[in-house]
Length: 322
Image 1 (cartoon, helix red, strand yellow):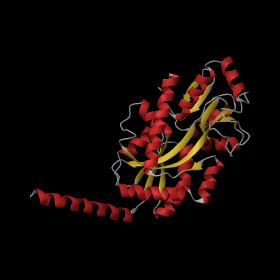
Image 2 (spheres, one colour; image 1 turned 90 degrees about the vertical axis):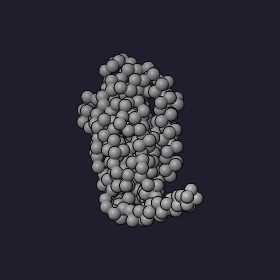
Image 3 (spheres, one colour; image 1 turned 180 degrees about the vertical axis):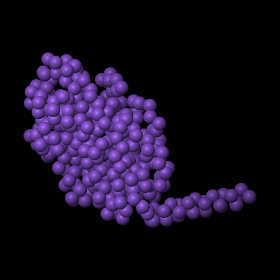
Image 4 (spheres, one colour; image 1 turned 30 degrees about the vertical axis):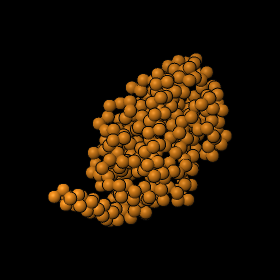
């Protein structure tokens, strides 16, 4: 009897594999929802709306961007974690959501409850100030903050986001004190940044591009090791006197953890093809963003490396991300 059981086991596995492959071939049969944890106008929303149309063309069904801002992205991530693992609910997110889940109690685990699909893109962050602020360089901003401790507010899209962490690291390194002003998405901070009620932000180039083009914000430095083609005249933070200050924003897509592997691979292949299309790469490059399109395994490894990097940064800077 045991021999019969052993013979049946491989047969059952083969049937399951065949069913999964057939499922992937028929997928998708209806629209796919792409949950975005930021409000319209934020960096993630911009990326989502750039890649949704080519994904729609490649998959043959609509990819619908569904904005679910709030709780530093936790609302969208929880909805995705609890969704049916059938490939029809995905989330686009950034390193901010990885950081948030590590330093706050969430009903989901970023490495248990999601299946990494692909890293979509990587983008520089910018240190930018309101045009109302009398600072035209990083040095002038630091001097102004030292003369006005706890008076200059900085905008972020929420507590425990990369924007908060990057700005607090900047303040700690520079020896200044800033006031954190969290918003429900970077776009929600724009009116206060324009008016000068909030003095500065360190946010993705993509989310700030419109304000920069309309001269409502003044860029002081980029946070990558090299200057960006988007703003070639703007120095890096390293050039501006902040050695080793490097922050790269990245964007990726996950599915619920139990999503069948063939569906994950089908989605990854479509994402990789979409972001490598010349027109998509050109639209991303306008805001200094580079297309990636990595494999699920590569993206999983990248997520883990980024988690360790920022947890070390929090500990070294003795930051309270509450």
